[in-house]
Image (cartoon, rainbow, N blue to C red; front, top):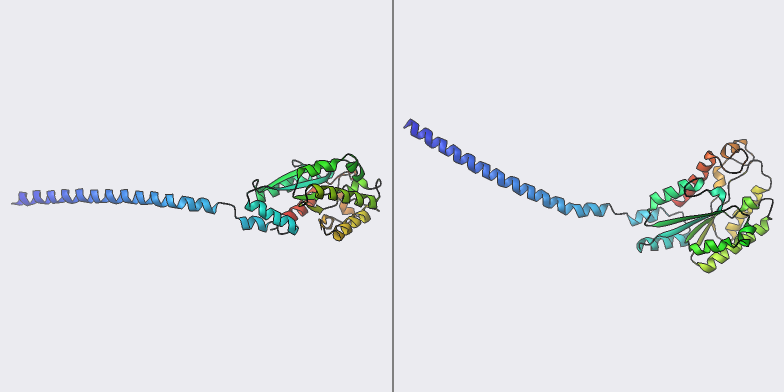
Length: 262
């Protein structure tokens, strides 16, 4: 009888173990399948949250002139790139070096390559030579929606009277508007000079011109030391032929702060 009960008990244990193992295997399989379904259902939602937020992108353009902001909004909603064109003297640099290098990089990173397209055109000429060479036609051919223009005022210094410089600027704007009426202009001066006598007054006239014609004006000189301050020398190359690395940083950061609202 003792051996009989031992045998029965052993059979019961085997049966319990068998059913326990089967039950656990089924639960594990169901859990794995459920996890797989959950992961699948979450993936699209995760991808959705990674999409660029249109409102956040548009908020970065708060400082832009209103017509440019409206066009930019339309471009984003239509999935078309908004074209920004930088024009001026060689003091601006290029996409790969000089003052505009950091500006272009920051704009691209902030707005994305799908939302903006950036071009740079620089010329070692006076405003009179710019028009005489018909370089304005090259600008018009870009059909840019926003043009940040440094109108060769420093190159004109001592060669072209300020009245003529501003008349030349008007001609450039009028020809651009004739080709692309929706283009918005933003004006800026070139870098300041230490000890200059007439140049600061010419730049003041440019700012006044912008106010009178209701054009945005980037007064980046406010971020530099005054023209009479010897500290300005640290921001310029020894011969004042261009900004030093310190000057490049000040100028580019001013543009970045304007073009990318934070």
